[in-house]
Image 1 (tube, one colour):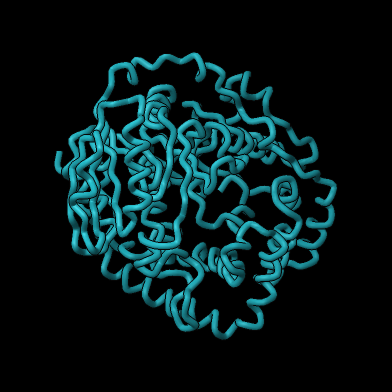
Image 2 (image 1 turned 120 degrees about the vertical axis):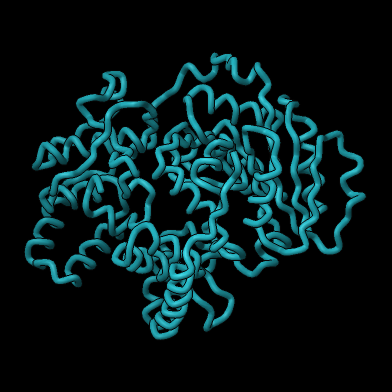
Length: 444
């Protein structure tokens, strides 16, 4: 953890963990190229020199530095005032106060905590995403890899969405890159084989009677012919250069994974942190290209997430821990329609944190399975404290900060029911942990 207090606000973030080789994602500041250093903003008010270094390193990753600079393998303990000052620079004051309360209620010295919190209030909020690192060579880059027309396997699981799948396949017909197959694992009822006859595409159709998303993707990967796997959803729209820009990203950054950006409506604003190239902290299996050798080396998707959530989050974390370079790629965008029928909605687990029944688990057990497996009990509890109270508020208010804060207070009134829901989820996650991962292998 580059700053210790980040564990309260980002307890289960990929970058909180060291990779399997003992390295972190954060570059040694003294080894960064000078053209990157000049784009960072040093903070002179930190008490310790290490805090100044760590702050610049954190900035570099957040602002889009992508390179091979040597990284930190451990982090020194910092003065408490520097921890609070760091939080004040990059997070809303409500969350800084939240950390203060957690520290006090966990029996830290209240006088020392409040003093450090108060003394750090001279820190100014930093809009660090306003001026990201620029990759100016992208626009002029003529990728030999793209020009070589590698064969791509596009994988689409589908469930009762023929109306939207039609537009998906029309968009694929219009792609600039033509050398690809489309593997559709259709779980619809009724199944309509005749639907696929009129598309000018190389379609490999699989009828799957069991409604199971990760089974579908794993099977499609096993039968795929391409060395580049492009995972896609059945309710999305893309531009003609979509495949090309995924391939170009892999080539330009010498990357293993290209994670495309998703928006929910045509013309919608792309969130700031997804508007530029950077090391990705997620995989969205509705819009991501992976080199097939990754599946050979670390296995397929974990079927413990079947009919639940976070299977893509687990795979992204597994890939990160194994050192694969995953790039957040704003040039490979899609419109994710998030239609109200079909898909995970019909499996009953579209939202990971908002159960439909009073005595249903909160969050969905697969979420706690992921947290506990990789981050341990303490971090999982911190994640529950951070996410569960917010989930009291309906999904449509998810990005409303005021409503999220209101959720914290409402959760106090619902506390007994929420505790019961979390207990149910914890118990079911324990069962998954005892059973172990269900990760199949891809033959060489």
